[in-house]
Length: 91
Image (cartoon, helix red, strand yellow):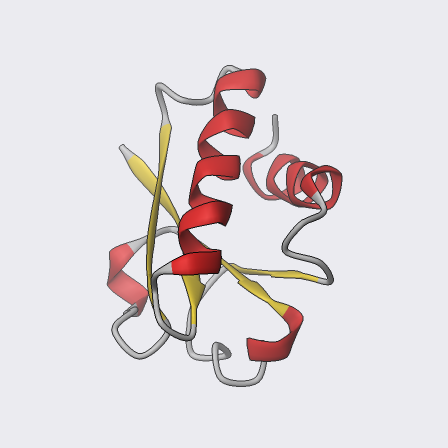
C-alpha cells in the first residue's frame, strides 16, 4: 500500500485535518485500495515514509527534502487538494 503523508509544523492539528481530507478524497476516487493517508510533523517526516507528501505553502521551503511534494495554497481548500492528488496519482 502506498502512502500519502500530510506534514505540518507540529504533526497534530493541520496535518491531521489534511489526512482526513486525503482519506475522503481517496475513497471518492476509488483509490483507497492502493493508497492510504497518514500525517506527521515536518521535523519527523523522512523521504522513505511515503510516496507523496502534502504540506502548506508556508512550509514549502522547509519540506523541500521530501519527494513528490504537493504544496497547498490553502489547507482548507478541499477542491485544490483533490485536484492535486488526482494529478499526482493519475486517477
